[in-house]
Image 1: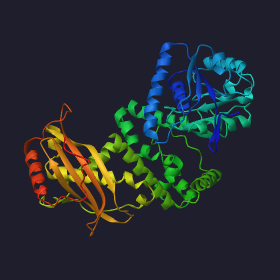
Image 2: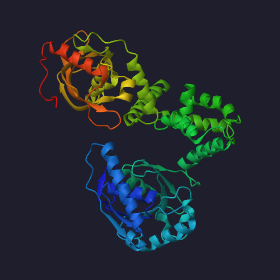
Image 3: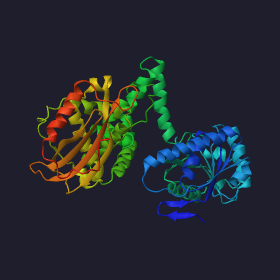
Image 4: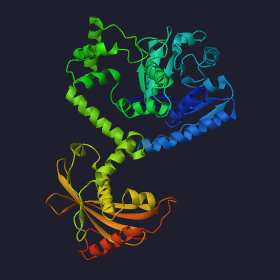
Length: 493
């Protein structure tokens, strides 16, 4: 009987892992952090250390992945025999190196020691399950469950049956993997390399040829992917992606348009299926089924929304295309017209609340608006790219938000910023978010900024003419009426 059941599948009490390399360690982290006890067959101390390190990495990643409380962690028990690893478990996961002469006897030994109803799965990335079943007792319960690295984060697991695999084994395996947060993809037929690896290796082979022929460097090949179609891959795969590219409402016409191009000698891999009437019909029918009730314009908007989310996530990490986005945004800020006179609160340009604010967690968006207002103030006092490179920058260390009135999609808003206090090292700000034409506060944000020196990363006094400008602006703002919404939640220190 399962230890836990729900609509997304049932979670086993215990699994046995054979192999503790990159994949085996990833499986250990995936199961342990989902509350499943793990019995790991490992014969060296270095293997155990590697798995513990991967488990720590997974904990760190999960803390950032979700705010939902995880179950109590499962136990990790290291054993020194195959029999000890597979007794009393509901699933055995084999992840030793990709050599048939290693896998076959190991799987055979596991099948002899495990209960007849225990599922046995191999993480092989290319060997057909029928080959792996050759020496297995009760081969009907054995199949391939091929994951991707890092196993604890990437959800895909390809399930491939061998000639002797029972259909119910695939169903049970899919339930287990779904219960620990994975996306089981059940293959229609047995094939070397399965689905994802065949696609992945086709791109890899072409990449190698480009480097081999001095067409591009490794860096240029990788950048070509991660700054272009690689960003689309979380949203749509290659077939539907091509259809949206040509913006054809008919899937069949889209495929017909690309057929001649695929025969051009653009790549080393030029063998293409013949675009017969039957094949075109198959592509069109399956593409329409995948599209479902979405129209092409709706799919384009969904693609754009998802790409925005991906780019914003990369921007938060300052990496890849996210770094490009951040640099573009900084350029936009630098080209903004001069803000209004510092004798009164600084006003940001008005902007319209986007439609998704009505359907998403709006509280996460307000800090973005106030961050823009802070950047505008810093630009006003002279903290530009040259200053940041040579002297330092202000960093927010405290923020206190007050939500006073509701905002709705389509509202035009602006932020008024007033310095409540400043010294050689800190600035205390009050941001007030208002609707255009309405001075009533909707949301307020008190913020404390501290000056960080370039180089050592420590707090230090503001330099050059920026010091004079910030202190002069603070003096002017001190003559303004003290804002009613200002509190003492954030103070100079």
